[in-house]
Image (cartoon, rainbow, N blue to C red; front, side, top):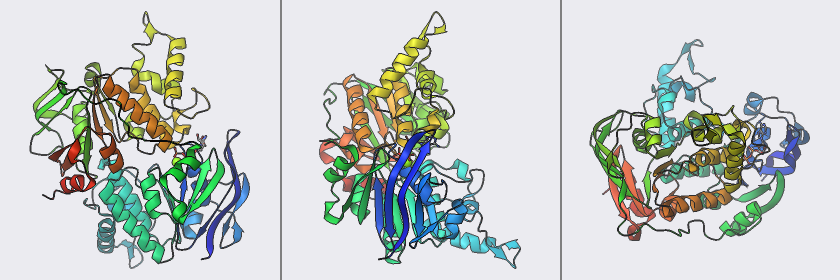
Length: 498
Ligand SMILES: Nc1ncnc2c1ncn2[C@@H]1O[C@H](COP(=O)(O)OP(=O)(O)OP(=O)(O)O)[C@@H](O)[C@H]1O
Ligand SMILES: [Mg+2]
């Protein structure tokens, strides 16, 4: 098959530091090429060069074997290259429909928006990606998983020759991912070249014809066909073996007391039937379900971001009404949210400031911030979570996606939570750092923290949880104890089948 898009020896520096150095990849029509590497390895930078968003400092981009200069994303799109960003890129105040057709609005008689045609095609596109939302809904009102599906639907509407997907499944659950994979396979057979980035190695194995590995901005090997195994991928990416990701050293004691008790609560924007659950000391309870099942709404209610209108909540047996996040925090209930850009991080602030903000009350003396201590504590967290950065003073927004996620997680660690609620804790996090985060969750559980973990990553849900709860369309549809864990059992509950 002919090579349609190629990067040849490309290099890119940011503020004098190399993000990419001498990287070459070639993408053939009708294949899926995966690009993998640790957080900060340069994957997104490479994709942005191929999609015309960045100009390389050295090397060149070739289309059909001819060197080209891509002026911007529009230029690339005109040549049939479409990138779906890792950080979503939608016009939030506009409707789903407007976003699907942005810049390519259908016209009637040349001037009138053809709403009928757009509605019909829009509905088809949403069905293709398995999204059930009204076309007139504002994008701003949708959770990240659903926004991701809109991005994908939008890309499908454009007849691309090359489709670049930068972690498209990071906030999708298994069912939505499967739909996407089916679509990718279909595109492949029609000759589209697909460049695919993911930290979920199972899907890389499932989808990729070839894999290109990046390490520290440099090429670190290519894998093909039967050579694409989990161990090979990890060894090339990380440069060392990682044995078992999900080893739990601690399990909750048989007589462990409930730390978080939720009895018959109802909350603003939540489902009609009241919701009950509990998490015991040292227990990791996984909360599974499809995108839009209402898991994020539930954890927002627990954290005081949604008004609770009925029922009661207890922490360590004491009644607790979470009226605001600071209420929740003062009671020891912490949330690492799903949407890090909205709730989790101040992108313009330094890493040190982000890590210290929720801890300043404890890192002060006589009402004054203890600067050396703040610096020391922040440095410890960075080291412990292996956050890749140049300096603690660097704005958080400059870090790679996975490293941003680690900061969201890290800033709460120092607070010593009683109940730790994690919404997609390893979204976009590389396999090495995942191991570190799982070890931390296990350590927290070992120290008696009650952990409630929302995750769309099936391996993580099955691997790490002591108990699994599943939600479907806003209600809890079931509970699985460890011996009954299986992908099929979770899927049955998640899709509402009996
Ligand atoms: N706009 C920018 N300004 C400064 N540094 C940047 C910028 N964009 C990327 N970098 C740096 O370049 C390096 C590569 O980043 P990139 O986003 O390409 O990594 P990645 O492989 O996509 O990581 P992840 O898996 O976390 O998404 C990182 O060290 C990052 O901090
Ligand atoms: Mg990236």
